[in-house]
Amino acid sequence: MELRASLGIQYTKERSITMKKYLVTTYATAEWQCIVEADSEEEAEEKVWDGDYEELNFGNPTNVQDEQIESIVEQTLEAVDKLKERKIK
Image: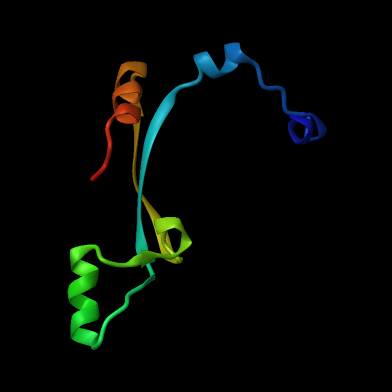
C-alpha cells in the first residue's frame, strides 16, 4: 500500500470491480530440476517418470526463457470464478 501511495496510485475496491478481467496465456521454455536416488541414468529416468524424486524450487521451474504472450481474452466474472476453481493436472 505504501508503494502505491508513493507512486501516486490510488486503488479502491470500486475500481477493481469495474475493471475488466482478462485471461492472459503465455508460453515459454521452462526447466525443472529434481534429485533422484538411483544406480544408473536409466533408473533415474524411470524414477522421474514414476514421480519418485525430490522436487527442487518447490516444484516450480528453475529457469524460464523466451516467455511470450499467446493470447489475451476478456472474461466475465463468472468465467474468472470458474477458472480459479479448476485445478490443472
